[in-house]
Amino acid sequence: VKFLESFKIAVPNALNDREKLVCVARTSLRTKISPSIADQMGEVVVDAVRCIKKPDQALDLNMIEVLHMKNKLVTDTRLIKGLVLDHGARHPDMPKRLENCYILTCNVSLEYEKSEVNAGFFYSSAEQRDKLAESERKFTDEKVRKIVELKRKVCTEENKKSFVVINQKGIDPPSLEMLAHEGIIALRRAKRRNMERLPLA
Image 1 (cartoon, rainbow, N blue to C red):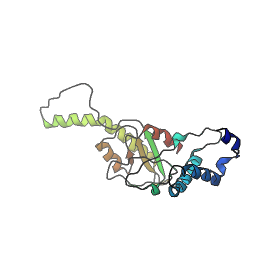
Image 2 (cartoon, one colour):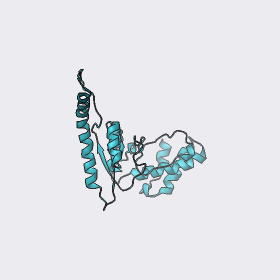
Image 3 (cartoon, rainbow, N blue to C red):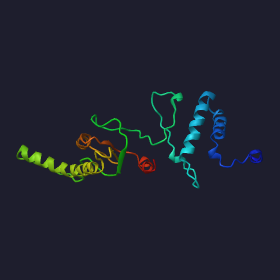
Image 4 (cartoon, one colour):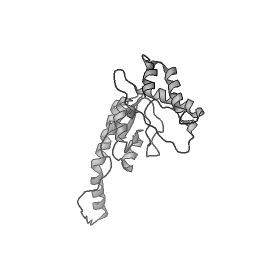
């Protein structure tokens, strides 16, 4: 350590010198992994750090996440300059790709939840049963309709915008159906750390 303290060289504005940072990263990584992989990973690591570093603020490495992709090789490693969510839409009719989007982040349950109190219901006819089931869904459907109304209000033919809902809680199949019918991508049970990163992306 004493030798390193005496041997080190101060580099002003080190983050602006990408080539020098890549050389340092490669040198360090080559002691851990094979050189062919280390060269590629060195560039990825440097670009990731430069992407999240803000002037006059400490480096927050929690803003970098490593996702392990199954059935992929180490050589397929790449940097995504953005936010990667490790789950997709849960309805087959939802769009697979949207651009120029409004993103609604919420922490609202959009699924029917059973009451915490044990209760029994007795029906004298099928109509009564249907009415009860309809009333149970009404509250959840109303929340979904509010989201649909917001989408229709902000996404017009003129601005050509699309709409994405990212929810921290659950979304049940009937709610997904309503959202898919409006061309909305809905992601459910998003991780809290991703919800915190979304406004920064």
